[in-house]
Image (cartoon, rainbow, N blue to C red; front, side, top):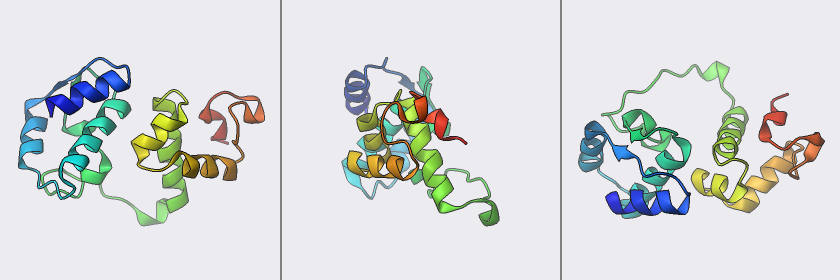
Length: 140
């Protein structure tokens, strides 16, 4: 885990955060059906999406929220639409990667081409679409 954390911090030009003991316990107890790749992706996601000096269980990606040791929040299906969730995830990843599409796509586990196609669907097909530099302009 330390190796992945150090490697990801270096690749994303971030300081290496420490891992809270409860998160380390979670990592050790989790089944990891995706093996080492899933662990690496979870650590990278937490590093890129988080902005703290210490990673905790609160920073875990949603993909691990099906584990019974993580409390889940009730979701009202009437208030959520898949497209809205997808859009929010993409915009959040873009904001946290400071507009870097490659990093955002990697964090989301999608190709850069898929990310570009989604942005084009939403009318944001270049860095200065609609006279703006950030994805915040999509929040119309």
